Image (cartoon, rainbow, N blue to C red; front, side, top):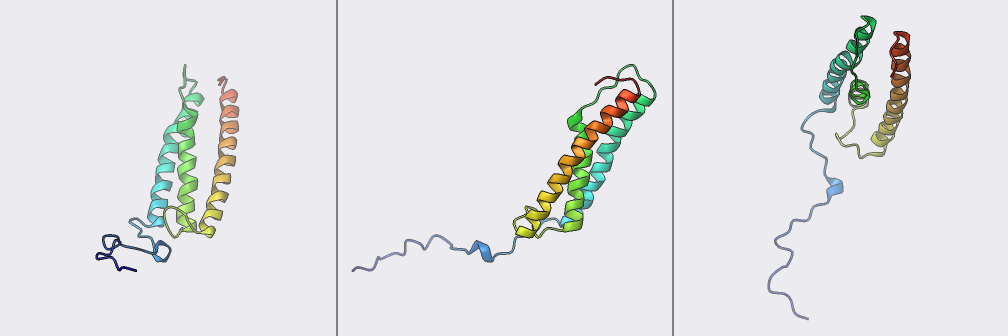
Amino acid sequence: MQIPEKNQNEEYEFVNHASRTPKKKISPIALGLLFIAGGFVCSYFFIYQKIQQMAEHSASVSYSMKAMMLGPMLLIFGLYYAVIRPDDLNPVSPRDKKWLYIFVAIFIIAMIALYAWFTTIARGYGYSL
């Protein structure tokens, strides 16, 4: 048996990734508050103003359901980051994933409710979607 002259693994660094703690560049609370603020702004522009246009009986109201979903989505996931405070911004622990799935379910239910509510309001003002 011959010993190699040069260690083949000398150029590589071996790291146990499971033992590292992830580096956070922004805290989950700050990200959550930023999302919540953005959610309020988007909700104002994409939902509230459209309903105001309908209440004023504008000749035409242009809206986008995708844009309308942006506000509640930012609010819901902002609450996830602010309240749950996951260990990392990308949830990897079982606790964080469980809570993320719960918030995704809340998001889906909220989007269905938003669509039903908006169509009811639009029909109430005499608009057809």
